[in-house]
Image 1: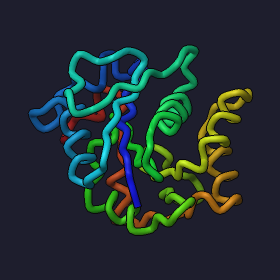
Image 2: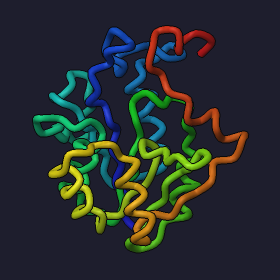
Image 3: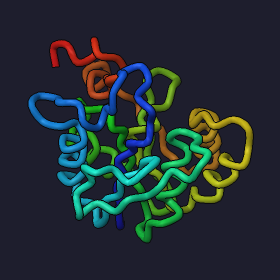
Length: 189
């Protein structure tokens, strides 16, 4: 199975008040932490999806533009899935620094040809730490052409179509999905 990875860094960070990607997390820029997590899983290609090409993007990561008008993570995933040549796309949000390579490898182990994996906390998908099959490209393009840009209904359709396998997040794993949205979220990190 071939796997690419994308770091989604296209948000405007309104609640944080500054670019999340350049925030220091445990003494390192957040973007560096997140790319190290992705590299540790061993994808054949790494992409950075953002509104503009970030100055911090390392040369081993290919830039994918969130084509205007941006529709949030949906835009970044759709653009990347359209450019990649691998069978699957591992997605990680810039603001999920507690995610571990071990958990992402657990997702990789659940992937099959034409089917990815999405973590579920209770009945809600965690689409920004998931793996999507390239065969879901048409569903992403269709969602972009619609009026609802939330990933939740798209994930539900992909699960029903057999293109995503839901994976229940254990109580111990929930902490991996904590994200950074406001300055107070960095406290104690």
